[in-house]
Amino acid sequence: MLAFHLVPSNAWAASFSNTDAISALRAALSKGADVAVSQLGATDGFLGNDKVRIGLPDMLEKASPILRTMGRGKQLDELISAINHAAEQSVALARPLLADAIKSMSIQDAQNILQGGDNAVTQYFATKTRAPLTQRFQPVVNQVVDKLAVTRSYNELAGRASAFGVVKGSAMTVQDHVTAKALDALYFVIGEEERRIRRDPVGTGSAILKKVFGAL
Image (cartoon, rainbow, N blue to C red; front, side):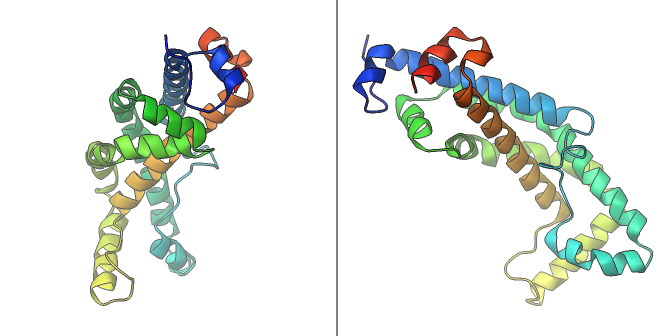
């Protein structure tokens, strides 16, 4: 069996192998993915969590004080609730693709994660899954927020603002905003769980996590 060499340390190399390292990382990422999907997919998983609650798109957020004085506050609150519940409902769709990303992890991937710092997990999952998950999330998000009149009004206004150069580039629709923020939250919670495992591998109750992350 090859000695562990993803991170240059003779002490670590003596402690565990490449196989151990890959197994530990897969276990850590699997645990993180399960926690993220379960936590965010629960009732009010987004709306009840200040760290991941999704607000209004920037342009609409800036206009919200004026809109509220015009009596549109109820519509804005309905939209905030809808976009968070849309994100909550879409998260379950992430599980299979996250599992595939974990299974396909290479030694190079493992090295990048171990040496990449606190956002390495986010970068890994984003690279592997963000594009396909965007496609999977969109139909669920559309189904929830499309029926709100304020969504259609905002998207039309944003489109006109983009066309007239009021905003740079293509204005983000409500649906695009929700999907992007839902994915950001998913990767954030996975990263939080991975950092927790790094800080306390013994507390996970997993022998392989204790062996590898304990040595790190």
